[in-house]
Image 1 (cartoon, helix red, strand yellow):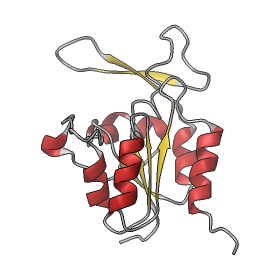
Image 2: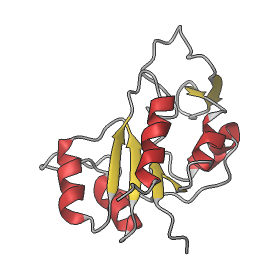
Image 3: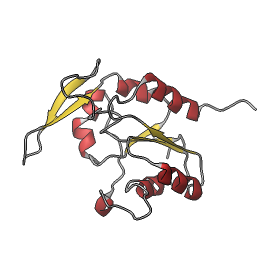
Length: 168
């Protein structure tokens, strides 16, 4: 098993800036339509440059999204990513907690075990940071991405800095 830090990736928000104005697809993004079966297809914007940029960061990549395994069908090919492991949220999917901790947080920490990780999402809060800080035995970065703009160069810089040893 790899001992590189894990990078948990949410799709909607960081990779798919779903909150951007519908009439203004961000520059560099392509549109895919994901059939849902029970309603019109879901519009998803993805930037194919993000896949190679994520692979260059030196993390072990893992989906942390409600798309779960479907991210390998719809998202990974557009980004040029291989099939990635994913956090299986099972019955915890969308379950609200009274303490305000996000429904993904415990499952992500369980998946990470004692490994360092970064988690890219648009829904983390101070409650998640406090929970991870109190309960995770290794360094962790909870990196918020604005769902109106998705991942930017500054986000990749922050992720790279997390894995770069600091001089003593």
